[in-house]
Amino acid sequence: MTKPFDPTFSALPTTIFEVMSSLARELDAVNLGQGFPDDPGPEDVRAKAADAVLNGYNQYPSMMGLPETREAVARHYAHHQGLNLDAPSEVMVVSGATEALAACILSLVAPGDEVVLIQPMYDAYLPLVQRAGGVAKFVTLRPPHWRFSEEDLAAVFSDRTKLVVLNNPLNPTGSVCPREDLELLARYCVRHDVIAVCDEVWEHVVFDNHTHVPLLGIEGMRDRCVKIGSAGKIFSLTGWKVGFVMAAPRLMKVIAKAHQFLTFTTPPNLQVAVAHGLMKDDEYFRQMRQGFQAGRDHLCAGLRQLGFPVIPAQGTYFVNIDIAPLGESDDAAFCQRLVREVGVAAIPVSAFYAENHVRNVVRLCFAKKTSTLDAALERLAKLKK
Ligand code: PMP
Ligand code: GLN
Image (cartoon, rainbow, N blue to C red; front, side):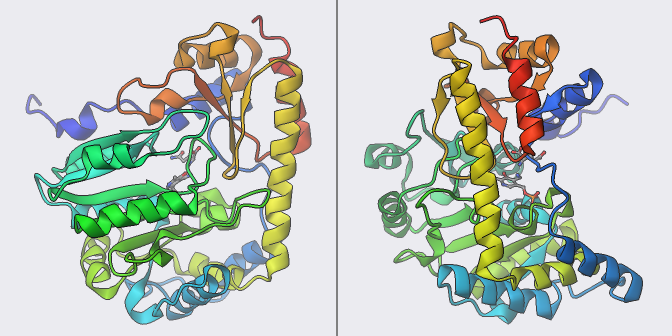
């Protein structure tokens, strides 16, 4: 065959998460790269799924999701975030946040539309925008605060802007967007008639005194914001790939048209278990956060003791280190050394930028058992700095 494939995908490297996890397996490294907990996850939720597999719910569910799951999603967000969502017209269950992003971007972006992406950005965003024919306009965030300013938005927003994608809390930085920044972004969306796709998969994983503020709830955004959630993150079951899209009916109708030909539905047995999990009491969520926060504090204290400069994290499963003070200027090369010389897998944050704006930051996942974190720290102590 000599005819070229679609260049958007054929020119891409394999995602950094797969690359580092494969290396970790091959080299028997402690994997603090790809973000997943090494805890089995809530037993009652897993038991519900097992029961649903054995005792029913194995045929195609409705394309929009099981009614009980959509209802549970609406009730969950009413309770936790004060949102008022109409389950039959404003909630759709999809196969992970990844599918949600694809459905939103492919259905809302027309060729030639400008799309504002805020980098560092989750690696799926840009290829999807390009495949949709969109023209990406970047806002670039830098450590340690990872915040955008009004000048940053003014430089990229115009009446040609169709969509902005916001990830809050932000992977890989672990930062939480302050309310005043959300309000600023909302003003730009309203001023230029822009739709915001808000990837909020980390909404429940926030620490200290931070609370998650959904962009959908900010003034002016109710009818122009699409909210994306992921059960994988809410229940620490990252392989489940059950996600939610929430939006006003006008947006939902078109996003559903893309979903119907991406996956059409999501495994019903998992949907039953997720509906159960979403109704868990506040104590579950408090303990989940407390557990991850303890992991963050343990890893950060260990890293600081070893002389690694830590950039504070307010949420997600990730903490970052600044390798510039160690005399390092290439995060990708540094991660290769880490995994090959001492046996710890990490993620170079430059992988989340379209161009190499920031090359001195390395992401480590702390959503692990203390023994896993200690094993990683023991190995990191052997790194020749
Ligand atoms: N968006 C962000 C910011 C993520 O970090 C992830 C995965 N960790 C996803 C989307 C994908 O979520 P899912 O596994 O539900 O597809
Ligand atoms: N979101 C996870 C992370 O940031 C990985 C997801 C994936 O492997 N695509 O580590």
